Amino acid sequence: MEDLSDGEKPLVAGLLLAAGGGRRLGGRPKALLTHQGRPLVEHAVRVLREGGCGQVHVVVGASAAAVRERADLSGCVVVDNPDWEQGMGSSLRVGLDSLARTGAPAALVSLVDQPGIGAAAVSRVLAAYASPSSLATAAYDGTRGHPVLFGADHWAAIGASAVGDRGARAYLAEHETEITRVECGDVAEAYDIDTPGDLRHLA
Image 1 (tube, rainbow, N blue to C red):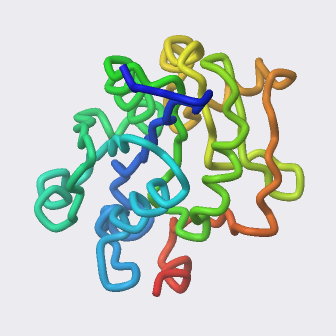
Image 2: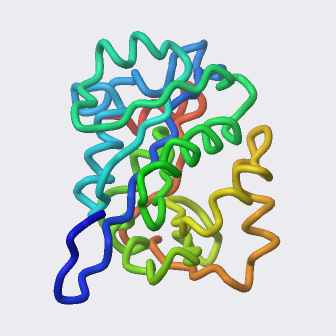
């Protein structure tokens, strides 16, 4: 257990979903796209750490061996999702299952293909953590987006409902009144890197 003093909150874990195969990018795994001279997955991990997350778990899938070889993920817990082709829901289940054994009170979930979301947005959403029953999401002009914070009390139910590419969408819709929305539109852009045209966002 963490030794906390002076009322300090326990560190929320970071959970990075980075298993996608980049089907619309010609089969280029998103984790290995180049951004600022390094694999995109490294940038995403750095954002979680700079935003204030504790331990970072990274779920890999497509070209997992190459991701482990080419990307510096030192200090991270790297988790393989053999069923990554089933969609983001499977990666979320794998990641939450990995975190369930850590004692973390909550997980801050981000996606590898959203480089426009930086440490400022992560920090804002982390600040919404109050207890293991917390639910919070970033919002962009009022619309829910990533990153998303799931208190540990919700993990089992989220994992059970996460199917296909919906991730936790259904669970969040069912618990709308419990969600704290944290406006981040002034500090982040929530675009995805999905198509060749989106590669213009990478430096």
